[in-house]
Length: 162
Length: 145
Image (cartoon, rainbow over all chains, first blue to last red; front, top):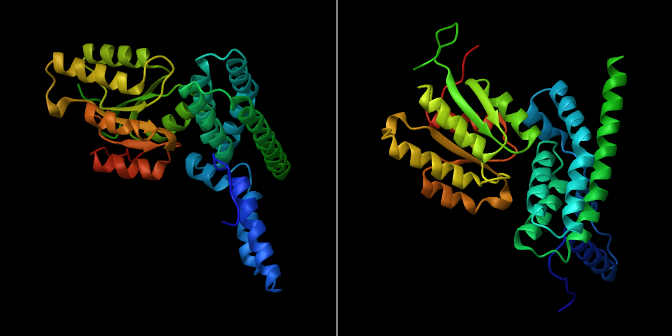
């Protein structure tokens, strides 16, 4: 055995370990890692918080994408605070709150954030709340990225229309 | 009672059930291309609206039903509708086609829904292209205008 990874498997951790081994193995042979190997590992890490191609497939045109982004931004704080409250009160509303948010994120093209919401939904469903706070922090961080992406998107589209 | 648009095309009566606003909006946009689209946000309303439409002899032809709702589950809504169809003795041809909407993480529930009589499922987020393909298989045609 060369290494280990703790369950549940997280993409970041897994990629971290893969990357470590790719880099160290190539060092042993004193050969440089082919750029495309490292790039494919890293590019997923750096992928956008919102998938615009997916948004186009769902909504079909830019105006509707903008409208859905606006709806999302308007509801974001409320949806997040519902999850936060449910975690703090340790109550059964967590599954519902996380499910609802997951849905909104799916129609916003925010796949990673939606995956995190889905994992919180499962915690709520199974009443296993010990990692819920951690996951919620992760969700908030990812939502910050989504928010930033949307603000930038709106800015560039609005200035392009002027 | 069938309804037609100005071009003489038959309008499909569609009910969309989803507890989340953006989801309802996206689905209404897709299904508006098939006829008259109504949306509700919970399971009890879904059953009530279905019942009322049936009583008014304007039953829904198609229901898109989210598997996970806030009050009663999509599976429960599906069972109640099937029960009503059973009690009212509605023949196979006149029955409402019900398609579930689900996310990847809930896919295992679909098996129970298929056993309860739904005609398949869409993975959320719903997109016009795959939806059109499945609806064509189920015999629903988009309006040309």
